[in-house]
Amino acid sequence: MVEKGVKVFGMWASPMAIRVEWALRLKGVAYEYVDEDLANKSDALLRHNPVTKKVPVLVHDGEPIAESTIIVEYIDEVWKDGYPIMPSDPYERAQARFWAKYADEKCIAAIYPVFTSTGEAQAKVVHEAQQCLKTLEKALEGKKFFGGGDFGYLDVIVGWYAHWLPIIEEVCGAKVVTDEELPVLKAWYDRILAVDVVKETLPPRDKLLALNKARREQLLSA
Ligand SMILES: N[C@@H](CCC(=O)N[C@@H](CS)C(=O)NCC(=O)O)C(=O)O
Image (cartoon, rainbow, N blue to C red):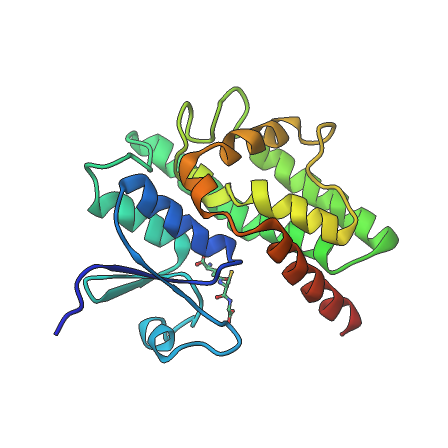
């Protein structure tokens, strides 16, 4: 028998999984949330996402969908009469997808080395991460949100920066998003953190800090 309804397989500290919760909440869709232990993944997660075995996975009426950016688009299409997440204009949609891909492929790859380095090597990678984010920041210039006047697709995709990056910076003892280097992105943080669906779902700061501190220590000692 097909299981009806919406289920999200996530992990409380995952910035990719929170995108799915934001999209569902923007649409007012009720869902069941399953928190995975990524060191001991459930049979259900492995069955629903045998290819990458990662969270998030959305299961809609028994059908699984993986990859957060694809899930967010799926949610926008299925519940199309609710809050509009994707831009209505095809060119704007293409741009939003372009920047989402840039953020996930280039910016994450540029930020990660800050987490795994120290000293002079870290100063160098901080600078590289800032250059990468400066390029992304251009897509926000003159606007309240990446989506324009309203929280939109690209805000759902990169909104995690506002909560996660300051924690990562504290853990690493390095500043990446500063008023001097990235003023537009930094000012957008406050607007993101004031969005209701964001406020409702953010994981506790201390818990995220402790987890990332332990991860960094483990990576540095490896
Ligand atoms: N591109 C994927 C990335 C998902 C991802 O990296 N998920 C992490 C948690 S943030 C995960 O499941 N890691 C466990 C693993 O790699 O085994 C997406 O956007 O959904």
